[in-house]
Image (cartoon, rainbow, N blue to C red; front, side, top):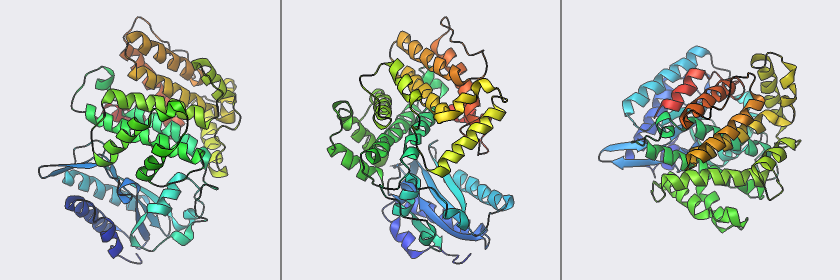
Length: 421
C-alpha cells in the first residue's frame, strides 16, 4: 500500500463522535490496513458516518448503533477471493467483539478498482462520495472521477429507482411478529427503519425540483421551507420528526404516524416524479405508471444494467417464455414491483381487516402480472398474514433473480432478513 497509516485528517473528522465510536473506527481501519496487501490503494469512509449523521445512543457504558460503518476500498487491480475473504473474516470478528445489539448495525464496504472509478455513473451515491467522503488512508482518488456531479448531470432516473429500493428495503425489514401484530422489543427498531426510509422521499424529491444537496440535515432544512403542494406540505412536521429520530435519536413520533408518513409520502412522491395527472384512483395510478415509455430515463450505464438483468430474468425465471417478453420493455418489471410494494405497504398499515385484505389482494393481482405460475391466489377465507407470507415468498424468489441478479444474494439470506429482528 502506498501509505499504510491512517491520515491525520481522518482523526479530526471523527472527533464529533463519542470516544467509543472513534475507537471502533480507528480499530476497524487499523486492522484493515494490517491485513491488506500492496494491492490496496486507498480507503474512503462514506455514508452517514462520514456525514456525521450516524444514529447511535448510549446506555450506561454501552453504545448501540442504528446504522453502519460504510466505506469503499479501492484497489490497483481486482482483488482475489482470498483477499476479500480475509477482510470478511476480520469484519466478522470485529462485529462480534464490539457486541453492538442493534440489527441495523453492520460493517458495509464496497470494492472498486482504480480503472472502474473512471466509469462510475453520475448518481447520488457518487455525489455524496465526492461531497462527504473522508480519505482514511492511501491516496486521494478525486482526479480519477470523470466529472463533478451537479444538478445538471446527476442521473435523475437512478433517483427514481431509489423509490423501488426504499420500498423493497422496508418490506424486507418487516418481520413476522410485526405482521402477526405481536409487538415486542423490536418495534422501536422497525419505527427507526421507517424513519430512515422516509428521509429518502426528500432525497428523491429535491433534485426533481432542481435542488441538489448532500446529507439528510441540509435536505430536510430546505424541504421544510419549500412550497410543493398542500398534500406534501402536510407531511413536513412528520418528516422533520423522522429526521430528528434518525439523526438525533429524538423519539417524538409514534410507529403508527411514521408508517403512515412512509406510505403516504412515497405515494405522493411517485405521483410527483413520474408526472401523473390528478386526481388519481388506484386503477389510474397503475395505468399511468405502466403506460409511460421512458419513466426512469437513466444514464446509459444504468439502462444497460437493467436490460441485462431483464434478459437474465427472461432466461432464468421465465425460461424464455415469450408471453413475458413485453415486460422487458419500458422498465415494466420495475414499475410493477413499485406498484406491488406500495399496495402491500398500504395493507401493512391499514387498520381494519377488510382494508388490509383489499390492499393485499391488489398487491397480489399486480404481482401476478409478472409472476410466471398460476398458484398465487388470494384466499379470502384465510387470515391476512397467511396471504401476506405466501406473497412475500413469491416476491423474494423473483427479487433474488431480478433485483439481485448481479450479486451473490440467496433466498436464504433474504428470508433471514425477514426474520432477523
